[in-house]
Amino acid sequence: MKLLFDKIKNPVIETERLIINDVTPDDKAEYYALYTDDKLNKYWGYDYHEDLPENKKPSPDYFYDFMTSLKNKKEEYSLAIRLKNENSIKNNSDYPHNKMIGEGVFHNFNKNGEVEIGIRLFKNYQGFGFATETVKAMVEYIKKFKPSVIKAKCFLQNTASKNTLLRSGFNNTGSDDTYLYFEIML
Image (cartoon, rainbow, N blue to C red; front, side, top):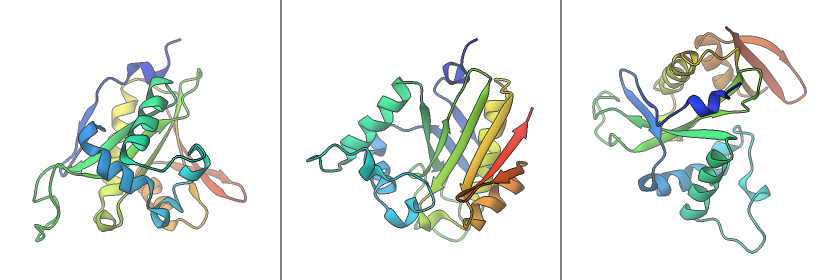
C-alpha cells in the first residue's frame, strides 16, 4: 500500500486569506525564527536542542536541511503558511503577504492510512483565526488521498489549540498526563 506521504506532491492549498505550500530556501530565516522561538515551541512538543549535534550552532541552513531530511525520509511533510495578500489582516499593512507566518505539518504516517497534522503560528499572527483556517484546509487537502484517520494532539494546557481542533471538526478521543488526543474518522 502506498503511504499517504507519497501522494503529497508540492501542494498549494488556498483559503480565503492564506496560501499553504512548500517551505522553500527563501523561507530559511522565518523557519529558523519559528524553530528557535522557545516560548512558541513550549506548546509545539519539540525541543530542537535534542537533535542539534554537539558543537553545532543552530542556523537557518541547519533547520532547513533538517526539515528537508525528514521529508526525504518520508517522516514529515512541512508546509509554509503564508498570508495570501495584504488584506488578509484588516486595517494593518504591517503584515507583509507571501511571507511565512507559520508551519503546517503532516507527520506520523503509517501503513494503516493514518496521518497526524500539526500547526504553529508566529505570535503576531495568532488570534486572527488563521489556525482554524489552516487546520480545516489541511484536513480537506489530505482527505482527497483517503486516509483512514486524521489525528492531532495538543498539550493539556493549550486551550487555544484544543479549541482550534474542535472548531475544525476533530473529536476529542482521550488524554494522558501530557496531551489531549483528537481524531477525524473517515
